[in-house]
View 1 (cartoon, rainbow, N blue to C red):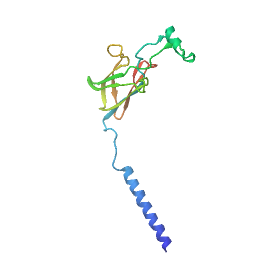
View 2: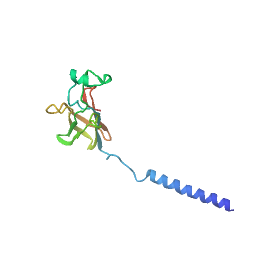
View 3: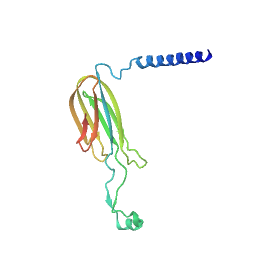
Amino acid sequence: MNRALNWTGQALLYGCFALVIGVFSRWPVYHPLQADHALIKVSFVHHGVRVADCRPYTAEELAKLAPNMRAPMKCERERSPVMIEVDIDGKTVYQKTAYPSGLSRDGASTVYQSFDVPAGEHRITVRMKDDKTKEGFTHLHDSTIILKPAQVLVIDFSAQRGGIILS
């Protein structure tokens, strides 16, 4: 009798637990985007241009180095910060200066931001500067795109593919 009561109690508790999980798996309803909206994501990891150019060591500098450290060129490690601006329909919606990572500021700069926009036609302008020795932006992309509801547009950077990419 006692054993049957234990099994019945355990079955009721497991049933209640399953019911709670079932209810909360369907309610409340989560919508990551409104029905007539799209998402634009700016997401890239990029190494800025080196702050200083490589130069050959002088004879005196080479003599001071240990024999196993005598590389022909001296290259500074620090890289330029990456500055980015994003305009949607002529209005600047994002500006950021991403500094290089690492103790010597020689790592990549990382940018991630997302924007919820109404679906439809939008003019997107992306400006990026990855060389602090030059005036103005070094990369520019300007295009008009049509976003469908629930579409995700990613703004990325790839030097191999020609710079700023919308995909």
